[in-house]
Image (cartoon, rainbow over all chains, first blue to last red):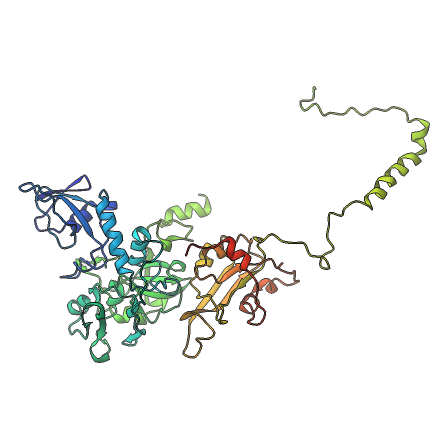
Length: 323
Length: 179
């Protein structure tokens, strides 16, 4: 075990752990935001640069600071490393600059986008973004295209995090979509417009940190803050059948995987709880799901607005009946 | 018991004088006061012939604005409905089809938009929340009806007609967002 200090908090982690995961072990405010790193996907990370941190001391053996900010998702810790995230002015500035870069081509169409309210880029922009733009050139634009009959791709909104490509690579058996071209021209595409028909292809929607890949069965149906997320399970032969159904009254507006506080799919029985396309797109009938109860939503999230009740049924009953 | 407020009046049973018994001086005195009021400035206006001037920030009936080209600004983002403390606003959204670009400004629009004027408290939070400068409160007064259903205003009453624009330029100046 090696000892590292993140924002004056000491933590012991396995050798070889990345700085980001060491910070996540502490949890709370010291965790750097991550747009591209996804712990459930092998090889992800190192692309978006939002998780930059300052290393004030490299290790106990060599306590010199690292000259540049490092990407915490791909830098392993060393014994005696001192890391600054929240406490560093350089990190704040660097992250604001990265946010500005990510937003260069990203359209400001949050009022239209289905991801609004649960978008990581929105959160990042809220915390680190500038009020205005300095960019004068025209934004890169594409027409929205269909990837298969259930997924919509808005290439305008894509930040090229590669999460969906890794998902297609690692959880589906043959990948038919990837990133084409290079640099500024890079874009996600299915090879020769070939539709994704794999059973687990819908998970690219869940891993997308922005609204580039969205559920066509939910497209413009509602806004996430009008829905109530409920834990639900069903008998499914293809997947674990543990999902979140987003209810509007008695109807199921959409189905997603169960995401943890970092927006990553939770583990179910020791395996990542990816859900299959049938559960995601076709089971919109309440009778097909066994609804377990409301999901715990961070009270600072817009999703928890308007839910005047707590997430504890016992306390709610008390609140309502006064008993 | 001693009065705490010291405003207690003790009723007296004193006898009235002859002049008081006549009552006429008191009646004439009262009528003189009434007569004087004829020449005073009136506190009321004769609505609807005469209309009072409203403050520029007066919050009356809502309008859903169109842009210069006559396209609806509203994109059914739902922020007004979230902001509404009275839960008066509801809407459903739809996707703009090819050929409707002259009707709606963005690719999503409100296919149904309703404000319940009985619930509305005219606080103006919807206007404040709107990111598209689509909804504004105006100096128009919501009329009265006999049926409750009539107070639920749909798009036909809320969206301004292309040929009869509602002027909200003064409001826009008061609540202008930084560029």
